[in-house]
Amino acid sequence: MDSISLGSQVVQYIFSGLTVGAIFALVALGFNIIYNVTEVINFAQGEFVVWGGLILAVLAESLGIPLFLSFFISVGVVALVGMGIYRAGIRPLHQPTILTMIMATIAISIILKGLAMFIWGKDPYAVQPFVDAPPVMLWGAYIQVQTFWILGISVALVVALTLFFQRTLTGKAMRACADNPGAASLVGISPGRMILFAFALSAALGAVGGAIITPITLMEYDRGAMLALKGFGAAILGGLGNFYGAVAAGFLLGLLESFATGFISSSYKDAIALIVLLIVLFARPQGLMGSSLQGDE
Amino acid sequence: MTMLLSEKNQTVTHILCFALFVAALPWVFGLSRATSYYTDVMVFVAIHSIIAAGLSLLLGYAGQISLGQAAFYGLGAYASGILTTRLGLSPWLGIMAGMVLAAGMAYGVGLPALRLKGHYLAMATLGFGMIVYIVFNEFIGLTGGPSGFGEIPSIRIFGMEISSTLGFYYLAWTAAVGVLWISLNIVHSRPGRALRAIHDSEKAAAAVGIDITRAKVQIFVVSGVYGALAGSLYAHFVTFINPPPFDIFFSIKVLMMVVIGGVGSIWGAYLGAALLTFLPEWLAFMEDFDVLAYGIILLTIVMFSPDGLVGLGSRMINRIRNMKNRGY
Image (cartoon, each protein chain N blue to C red):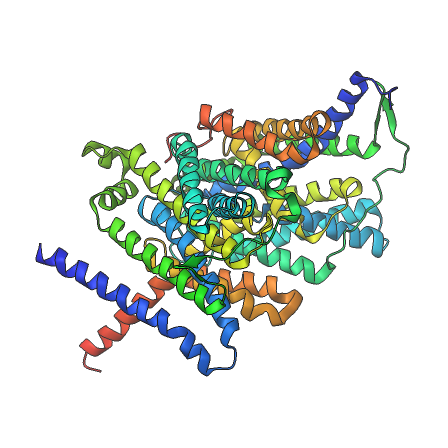
């Protein structure tokens, strides 16, 4: 062990931090997409990650469907689950307040967890890496090839989402709904459809996160709540609704956890990330980069 | 003035009726076959009611959310457990110490945290709860770590040891009814009215001279003290503690008790605590389906009665009254 230098350790921690951070960032983005259109924090966000990973495991490993195809099917199915959640659990609420909507999403996350336990049982599931290749040696650290897939896909998603919200008509319509649903419906945008679409999009994002991380960390039915909490932390740290804030905060939390595990102790990794989060909140009550909804209560 | 007095008398009557009902309950259970089992669950209802009452004051009257109540619950339990087993102190001193500790902690955390709003406050209290939970797990020398510790002594009153379930039932419910009485008094007091003003509009409340930060922190301290009391009772009843009962999911459960029962009603907190404590017991026969059924029931209640069980009840009473008035 003496031959491992500090430098290569640091490289190792950076990559493992970025890997976990990418998933936090995807979950945080999912929170933000729904929050911007509805002002709801969807606590079922973590369950999408679990479902994405578990569906991929069944399709690719048990049924032997090609991985590439399984990936898209699992993301598609979870997007449908996301839409179903809105239709069955959120839209029927009578005179919803923020609090009842949060309660509803917590209840939905319990239902999704119960369903996952019923369908897949309590054992963890594995998926083969996307490409079967030996780890890459980088500045003295061994990096799994899957790590590059995770980072590449996450970055590609962030770029695609940015283009979507800024260049396409649907993306602009969603932003209009976020700013002012009343005015948006005056110019012919249906806020109901945009909310439905937001649920599908954020469920799909979560599913991608689950599908790309499962080859490294495995997946089991009860992982969702913790992922949701970490993603919520990232969304808050970046400033609720703030797109780039969420990505930056997700990676930051991942790196904090990874370095805390490496240099202090794995049992305190969550505590250190949380303490940093609290300090930031107390110093900057609107998150690192500020909320998207200025002047709201 | 007469109105206020009659309202106060009414509250006292309600509390007395409730106390009589709770006192008679074990004898009703005694007639059925599941005597001590239901009495046992009812002890947990009392404990959960106390912690839920605290959050109800904070959420329903001051409009401030907390996802960290389990931390105070744990502080009470560990303070009681550690002081009685390690230092051999009386359980009463343990309970007191837990409450003082929780009050200090609530003050220290509440002062910076309660400046935050909405989801940011939720995250800050959530983070606080998770940090305290990690401390329970990692300060092994003090807390016994993940495996916890046992042999926590039971409470003595006038040299009489309260070790039977029925005895503890009366002790826990005395505490729970006391907390109910104090909470209803807080609601109807000057600080209580100040809190409701804050809930409606912070700016308007500040304009009429209410010290907003102070009022919020005060009620957060009260909720912390309630939590610690509940935790101490838990420790002395179960006589063994380890970290899981004090995790953030319990905080979320306390929030659900308050919302399911009815935000803005202390009675609702007690109702919600009773439902969410009994529900897992009733669903236990479903084995692996229990999580699913639990979620579906919660969602159904939120969907069809967004103002909670209390709201549902009062709407039904109104409907019956209307029918009577119309001469049916």
